[in-house]
Image (tube, rainbow, N blue to C red; front, side, top):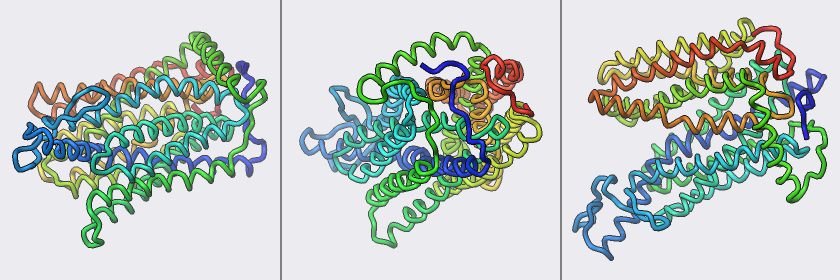
Length: 474
């Protein structure tokens, strides 16, 4: 079993490290299309519409329903009931339930994946297995049409599992490819590269989607082709990190069959037991979970805020998504450069201050003023990737050596497990006040509290307690 201080170390040759680092960046480039295109842009509306189409076809057998009238004309999806595994619920709720179920499944799978990856000498194989699982599931969404929405549910589940488990394994390579002084810049570049990749893929897909009538392609087929292209993009670009990354994990015993899975459970149990000895690492994780909930909520509700409060059409909202994606690339690189001079902790604190300014500015956007909306979107992009990237690299400094994937599984699970709080605050304040302006302003609390908690964590002591060498700048 791995112990503190027994983990793999980066290559001593700077050229070899650079080669591996560039390979590592490309997995961010590869997988970002899943979150950006498959989940954020095309997922919710398409899955709900396919499920509603199935409900509409049921009217021929069951007569008029609240979903459709005698002419078969669709009404609000809130009243459009569908059934799955004996449960009946509105088609409009399918996406929310689907993401919630996927999160619960990941809570079970990711820690075990992390434990196995930490002790395996074949970590690249684990990364490849889950990456290609997610890519295949994304591509196979091409076949989800008409009454096949149940297939879509299964494929989205598999896609989320592949994405989450591959991300945990991917993060765990960071200490293997970068020295303590390199990690902030490497992590920031990787995150920035991911936003650039996701933005390029989405721009091409949106250009195709918006030109579908001229090309003689139906809306459903256009979305399904975008799914297919996302899966192919993910799979093809995953080949680059698989070719460049090296295995450095020392042997732990048998690496095949049930024994490695059983050993993974034992490893996880020991890690959870020993985690109490690193309270400062857990304190930083707690601070991260607070402010990242605010970040994810701002991103997830921005389209709703733009459409319902500011009355923008889909063209403005689509352009805003692209603005955020491409500015996030620049922001990620800048965060790495600033952290090199001022250190990760100070840069994160500065970034959280910018988040407070951006969220406050969103309150003052006037209805229909799209350039004000773009300016705020650019502000979001500037700090979006960098804040999370530096949190990822700073957290890696506080993880006991040889336990990277397990701690990153807690990192990912914690992020998913708390991601409901921000949307709840947004929805509750919007309902109570009748205005999403006050709802967006209420999200400031996540950044203020996160700032205070990060400021209170003595990161040098946390790094020393984990038995890791301290970077020269913090």
